[in-house]
Length: 322
Image (cartoon, rainbow, N blue to C red):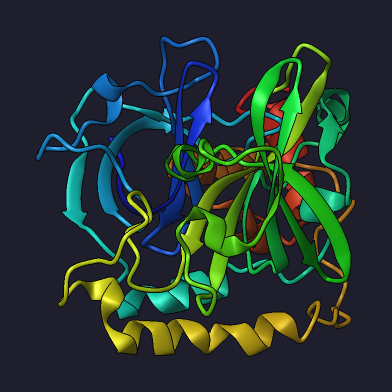
């Protein structure tokens, strides 16, 4: 069974359970652990309690054993967890994690293909998602508390990305607890325990489809890049990795690159196999690579095809559910 170390960047409410996700430390990209015997793959404490009795926190390095990939058309990062206990390797954001965060920051393109707050699930049936998790550096971030018939205390993150405004629900339970004392209205970043001078990253996730047939974009992780405990909203002890000024300095170096706007696309030579028929040998190689845990980007590069073509072929071969 494959075992991966992940940097936890999302610990979010999901139905009656939790959704935990992060970046693989081996460079394999995003991963979302899911459970086998729950309706929507949601996790419960029995799945994720760590060896010290604590729950996973943002910026934890966690070692998880998996059974297999469990990719769906709207969430390609899903992996089915094994019955083995999760292991806490380290707690806190170390300077060596900074390049991982910087290399996975969104380049400013529309979130998951457009600027809306929801995506019709039917779209994924014909166009499987290339990703359902992303890390962003939001501009002009503010919070809004709204009262709705179905949610008397709904927290919204309002921010700009590449010049476009977004209003997305917050599902980070640690921050939601801090919002509970606030009446409806609009609030600055500091309202959830983050100092005004601190830079903040957000992990955005695409939800499971709801009864209305839509998958919603959610703020599943609020990540202050300072010495603040992301769960308690208070300063970390002196000597904590995240309170180290070297960490903040390295992470801060990513800001100019992100704020400079979307990465300009460059022209590339046509993919060698684009549009060509698949042969049995290539299909066998594709399945082996997929089951070995290679990312879509790596497989696509190896085959000279687009990630979309790889996903479509995996669906046709029965490796990915539509």
